[in-house]
Length: 268
Image 1 (cartoon, rainbow, N blue to C red):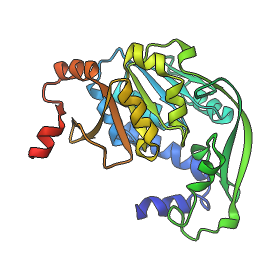
Image 2 (cartoon, helix red, strand yellow; image 1 turned 180 degrees about the horizontal axis):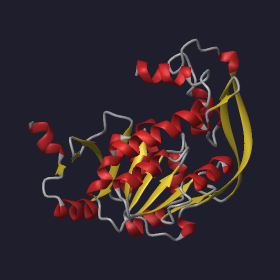
Image 3 (cartoon, helix red, strand yellow; image 1 turned 90 degrees about the horizontal axis):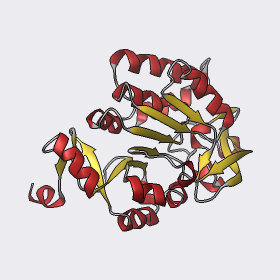
Image 4 (cartoon, rainbow, N blue to C red; image 1 turned 45 degrees about the vertical axis):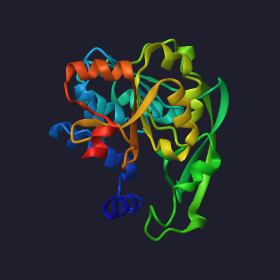
C-alpha cells in the first residue's frame, strides 16, 4: 500500500510519468510471464477459444495480462477515452486477435460526458468516469503523499456510449472496471448475460448493492479467487468473480476441485 502510494506520487515528478511506468511494467510482466492483477491469472484455467471482453481498458494493462494468460484468445477492449483507445490500438497493432473499440458501455446509447481527473498537470485517465463525483473522489491524502485539494481539477470530454446487448457478441468472460458505472453497464448487458452466462470479474462490486441483487436475479453467485481456487464468498480484495451454476459446472468438469462452496468454507 505504502509502496504503491509512493510510486504514484513519484510519477508526477519523473520523466515519462505514467506512460514510462506503464511501458516498463509491460516489459517486466511480459519477460516474467506475470499478470498485472492476480485475479487475471484465473484465465489460465479457461478454455483457449473463449471470447474475452475488457470493459474499461485504461492503458491496456488488462488486455496485456489477458494475452499472457490466454495466448490465442480473441480479446475485445472497450475504452471511451478516444486518446487512450488510440494508444491501446497502437500498442497491440501486431496482434490481430485484440480489437479496441473506442466507446463506453452503459444502459443506453448516446453521447455522454466523461470526466477525467487531473492532479496538477498529471492526468489520471484510468479514473475517468461518467459520474463527476466518482472521478473526483479517488484522489485524496490516502492515495497521494503531500496531497493538496487545490491541485485537483476535472476535465470533461465527450464520449460515445452504447449497450453491450447492441453488440450481439457471445462473450465467455468479461472484466468490468468502469469507475462507478458498473450497475448501468450490467443493465445494458442483461440479454447477453442471460443468453451466454459469461464469467464476470468486477471491481469493487460491494460499493453498489444493486449489482449483487441484479446478478443474483440472473443466476450468478459471487466468488473470490484465492490459492488457485474459487471460493464462494465475498472477495477480501478489490475484485470479485461472478459465475452461474452452468459455467461453474463446466469449469469444475475441466478442473475438479476448482470450486469451494460456502459450507466447506464455514466448516474449515
